[in-house]
Image 1 (tube, protein in one colour):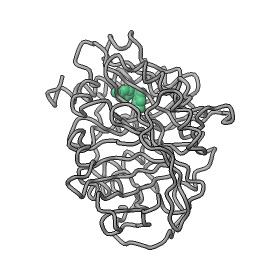
Image 2: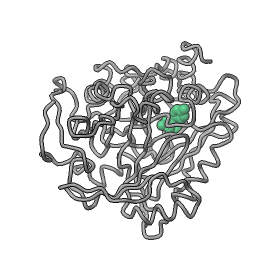
Image 3: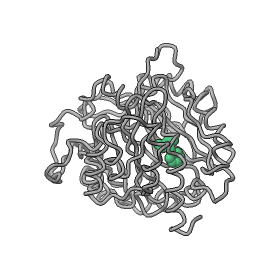
Length: 401
Ligand code: TYF
Ligand code: FE
């Protein structure tokens, strides 16, 4: 990997337009002046990894991301290494302990590889923190400035479920590659020939798993503390007892750019997949990140070629005449979706294509979803049965059902 001393490229995040985001993640109109906690977008998803140095290569090869920044012992930072990767408007930060006494070593001991921070870009950090505090949020970091030659970032952090944080970041006065203290860094990694320019363009949603009975209080937390609104799609008692063994509700910021579904286990016929997560993560945490793509077939092909494994859907899913009737015309023949194991769902607004990886680390916890939206603003409720059956087959193989 080569290091550069200044910022040599524009960030990936600069070249995704509003219209593309509307298509990708289902933006809606919203007036931020009436919002008590106006959120612009996700700033980054921060992961703690057992080996961030190696994970950074996986995120380049498997998810087609680009290394843009770094900090670590060579830059005078001795606690941990941090690799910043981008794809379209999405930014991931991978952190791995160097110092055996780093808090990140404890985080990894407790949770394995996982998401530590769903950080949000906001225009006014102080206003958001004051509102959050007035609504009873735990402020983990008071607003403060971080500066270097590229300018100033104002940042704070509040607590959410489990040990997960929401950093609040105003980077409007900053032109560096990520944060003060990070250096621009590129990688010697080269994509295989024929790989798509990007495997994904944006983060669509980030899902939290919380203990049984806590979902509604976390929905209320996002309503009250962060001014998030409830979206209509949810899994209630009726679906839960039938086959999902989980309940789910979705909250979103005003323009739906940031969407956080929240799951809790339900008493079902079998042990809930949410209980399996909570057992192996140790507490509430982020279960999956959905990545928006405008070419899910190209994305799946590239990820499979890099060795990523996806949940398997039985042929019966595609051969079901009811599915065929409900889905109607989509941009690819159903046979192509079947070949790749891609799920499809339609609602009154349009349709979506989606697919789920197996857990990406050693523990049966975090995984990724790829989603290609064509008008639908939902989460694939029509696929829940087939999806949960596929998850349960894996759970059974792991001996956790
Ligand atoms: O985010 C969603 O709601 C969908 C479906 O454990 C889903 O991706 C819901 C719960 C779950 C796995 C997927
Ligand atoms: Fe999802």
